[in-house]
Amino acid sequence: MTASRVHVRARDAVIDVEFDHPPINVYDVAMRDELCDVLTAVIANSEVRVVTFRATGDHFSAGADLREFGTAPSLHAMRHARWARDVWGLLRAVEVPMIAAMQGNAVGFGFELALQCDFRIAADDCVVALPEAHVGMIPAGGATQTLPRIVGTAQALRTVLTGARFEAADARRQGLVDEVVPRADLVARAEAVADALAERPASAVRGAKALVWAALDVPLAEGLAREQTAFARLPSPG
Image 1: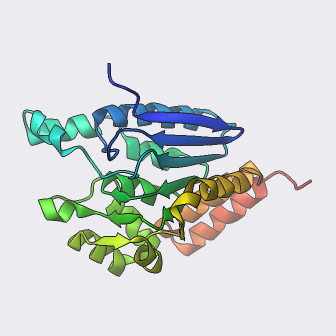
Image 2: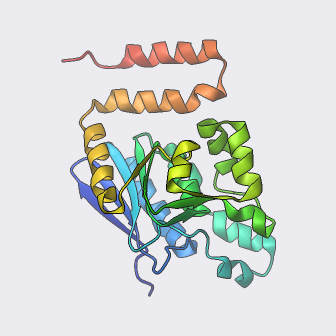
């Protein structure tokens, strides 16, 4: 039996998801399976209003466990094993705000998960990167799609094609993270943001998130029509 790699804590309407795979929280099949179960439960629970992701130890996640790549009989089998359960599709199906609280290395999987979130809070010792270019791969957790939507095409290309590492302050300047805080304040800041979001009307928050994420996928006129429809469906204030 392997120890649990993902711990979950409920704080009223906030779900805190914590990665715990020492020493560097690498992403392996076992973590994927646990994360799929957690996300499936979150999606099914209408009482959840916010999800935060954090990690034990010195690093948010140093990426995929490359040792698993050599255990499959073929590249096809390796890819099937890793993506047979769609973590990334589940992340996109989460209708409530998601927050990534990152320390140390947040690279590969760690950064791709953060890019699926709505808020990225980095400790001042955090480093983000998509290093796949260095080993002849491309990001396969959605970064080629989420990153251009967040920082634009030019910065996304520089980040993906070079595999460059960005320290926290530089990552903030480039728009790769939203906020940088002292390491000692990381969890408290993430919880404060989550608690503030959880106090807002759930239907409005869910609707606004869906509209903003979809904004670049539809023509402006259609997006405006969707916004009007969503607004009309909201319950009256008070």
